[in-house]
Length: 457
Image (cartoon, rainbow, N blue to C red; front, side, top):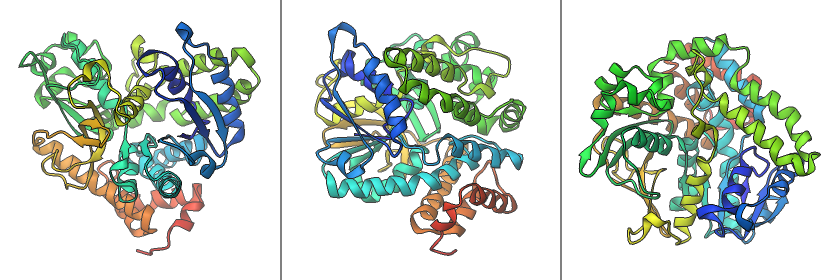
């Protein structure tokens, strides 16, 4: 079952299930969403997709009933957005109005988004415990790390958080360095962090670490997105490759200035696109897929546009799509006991995932959800031990992890004071006065937040 089955990216999952390595993995696909009009639109897109090579995809049904959707389910993939694109716009605009970064997962906007996402995802997890207690939850609901951390006490090892950003960085860096990583293997890869806050610190091939050479090669770095985000001397001095979202931490002033200079925020652009798109999809008949795919490409072209103020274009491979659904289905395939070609005899599939630390990243609590290489088997995801992060990286992770845990406490226990402390402590905010203004702004934008505060300070 896909929770958020009317979501824009659902056709990417279905496309991956109709051909290629994931064909046949799923026999029945249930799309659950609270909005029947969005379900109708996405079902029209799926119906118009012509499987390649004669492959047939899974049988598709839709429902607006969560209990009905969960009954008999083996795997749940969650990608919900409480408040929709209008909520995303408010997340951005409240922060920008105070001169702060307005981005949906990073900084103030990410904390606001988490306060809305966690309660809905907890309700889903608790319903799963009743309806399908043996099912796995693969979580893509953002902010993925915070949401996954909130769900672990309910589902334990049966929840795994995913994101395509870290894995994409590793594969792009490997290609730029002249190496190739087999599907489902991360041999020689060192990566540690939190969701949207991580670093690639080792990239071995044939027993040699290729990363230092890559960081010294300005031309090679210019060949992929993360390498272009940061000045080459900065990367060489850092000694590792940051996840693209660290652009917001390392170059905050430029990022905020670029976003404020844009005619629309990212949320406003997507909101305008989708407002007309969904009714058109539902009525497009056999043209629905082509209409959706054109919109998808346009949307991909605008991703992280604030970091490309010079007019640079995204790489064609990035525009083609196919990132996060490969991670999600790779996890599901490993949990189901199936293997990819590169997994044979390996004892599992290796992917960068969000899961409890269990000592994998020294310096962070054992029960804190981190984003690291993991080996996935039918028993779940086990994080692989990483080197101790550098002092600056570890200090940033420790601070952001405390922010994340305060946010979870605010959402789970209804403690407004914890929300205030989370905003004030975040390194992109760093002010009690700004924290108070932010939370007041988000409470005005989302009146339901006021109903969440039942635990006082």
